[in-house]
Every structure is written in structure tokens, then in C-alpha cells.
Image 1 (cartoon, rainbow, N blue to C red):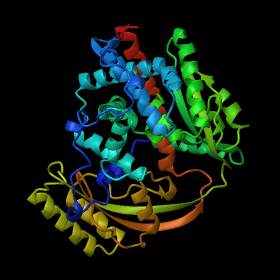
Image 2 (image 1 turned 45 degrees about the vertical axis):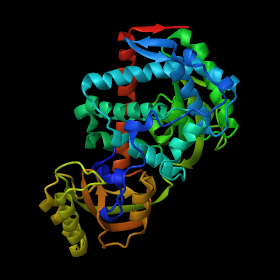
Image 3 (image 1 turned 90 degrees about the vertical axis):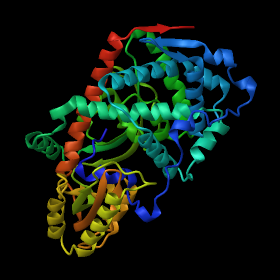
Image 4 (image 1 turned 180 degrees about the horizontal axis):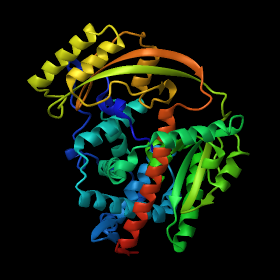
Length: 447
């Protein structure tokens, strides 16, 4: 999992200007009633079966209908139209996943961490955009596939909230010290000339021995779907219980000493694009795919430095009804954009705005920027020319590319090393917290 730096705080509504604002793709508050299952009746649970209790988690009920909807969401999202036999094989693990999600949701509620409808609407809009869908198409496809919209909404709510919770739990440990970054850099320099791997994973937890057989059957089913053409990233987002699920399972570039020995043994011999068999690792089962292989110290990439002036809103932005103060701030941002002639000008504008957000986010590896629109902007914008205002729900940013050059990196820049260290901490913290929640939980499994 990658915790965004201060630079990426304005990305949710990147590039949206007041003149082009529109209501978000759909109203989450009404989405639960919008999807009308269209699958044949014989292939679905009856109303009575769907309402039957499959598990009770600390007093909260999970029904067989919940499990059926999640399994069908998997079938629909992979595009393979999974057979009833495949759906039936998913049931045990889907129930376990829903139990864990319910535990996460209860912890979010206990800590007062809320995920609003706007957050979920933005997440679904991003999925639609990434898949070339128009606004609202996702809801239509789910309805046509017999999946309630609530199923996807619930999953997004937990994923987004859990990410926020882990940031809160980490607290000061989310700050990576310069000495730690230097130590990792030195370790990588000592490995120059060795291979490193671009790996993606699907992690299936096994917290008790009695769950092993179900987890193995589930892994076999998932692998069958992946080898039939199901997109790895989509399946990882649906079923992986690692924090990397939020990035489609992508671990990024990793060195041999960062991988479990058994996973390393497999990736060293598998061709790019292949899907592994189930791999037993501490805490569960991993399914991995190798996306690339390269030699440490022999990597060419474009590195950019930028400056940003961020003008914060006094209240959250409603894109359909911006306030007069927000409109005025947009005009001020336009003046900053038009008046800035150098990166120093943007630094001064950022100080004047009083946002507290740093003007200089450090060196950026352009191809590693996750937001496609921002990546394209930084890759192509003329050096020394301020961007148009970039609007998010918490403020407006103006960017300027100060330098952009192609380098043989040798060792990744400090920011990438920082993200690697932080990602490992987040993953460890997440697994430890889940084990504690499972240990304390009262779970009643029904037939």
C-alpha cells in the first residue's frame, strides 16, 4: 500500500474546473434500491434462502444473499460469466472474507472513522473511467448481472475506511526517518547487478488450520479464472486480503530479500505474465504473477521536480454548488497561474496561501505517479510554465514543472524508498490488527 505524499492530496477531483462541474455519477444513498437483479430465477437464491443467516459477527448478521451477491460480483467483474459450480466453490471463502470485512467495519465504527457517500461515488467513478465506462454504467452492468449495487458500495466503504484507519493507527510511525531511507539505499547499492522483480499478489489468509482446505480450494478456483483470462488486478481488488489489493495486488519492484523464500523461488523461474500455483506463506496462501524483471542499478527513468501552490477551501467542495468563497478562491488561483513565472514564484504563492502543504514534494519518478492525469501533466507540461488550477474537494492547486530529465537511477529516489518502508509497515500493522480483531470476535457460523 502506498500512502500518498502531500503532493497527492488534491487528486480525487484532479483537473475538474468549476465551469465543467457536474453531479457525481450517482447518488449512493439511493443506489441500494436501484439495482434490480436480472439473472434467471433458477440460478439465484429464493427470497427465503437469501434472507437466511450465514454468520453472525459480534451480533451483526451476514446472509446467504450477501454471499451470493459478492460471488456474482466476482463473476461479473472478471468478465468470464462464472458457472454456478464456480460460484458454489467460492462460497466458503467469500463468507470468510465478508466476516473479516464486517470486523473491519465494526472497528471503523468504534473509532469513529466515516467514509462518506462522496468518497464512494468518487471511487466508483474512477473504476468507470479506468474501464472506459460512462457515468452510471457500472450500476447498469451490476443490475444486469443480478448484483445489488450495495455489494460494491459496502466493499469500497471498508477498503477506503481501513486504509484511513491504518494511517491513524500508525501515527508517528507513518513518518520514515532519513536514517532508515539511507540504510535501505545502502542495501540496494550493495545489490547492484542482481535481479529484482515486478510482482503482483493475491493474499488469502489462513488464520486457523481448519480453514486451510477451504482456502486451498478457493485459491485453485481463482487461479483457474486467472488462467482463463480474468484480469489479475480486478481479482486482487475483489479478493486479496493484503493492503496491496487497493493497487490491484501490485507490490511494485521488489528485491529478492523482500520476498518470502518460497515466493522468490517461484518468481525466479516463472516467465512474465504467468500465474503461480498456490504458494504457502506465513499467515496464508499467495498467488503471484510476474510483471517484469530487471537488473538493479541499470534502470532508466524520467525524474521531475515540481513546485505547487495549494489554496485550501474553508469547507468541503460540493461540485454542483460551489460557494461564493470557493469561486473567489478559483479566481485567485487563476491569478497565481497567470502570474507565476518561476518555481520560486509558486513557492511564495504557497506560503501566502497558508495551506501548510509543502511547495516542494521532492523528486518524482514520472512513470511511478499513480494518477494518470497528473502523470501525463508532469510528463508533458513545458518546464517553467504554471498549470491551470487543479481542483479537489479540499482546495485548488497550481503546479509548475521545474526540471525534468532522464536518468539511470541506480538506486530509486528517496521518496520511492520511503514508500517501500511505509508500505511494509502498513501491511504488517494491518495483519496484526486483523488477528487481534479475529481473536476477540464472537462469530457464529450457520449452515
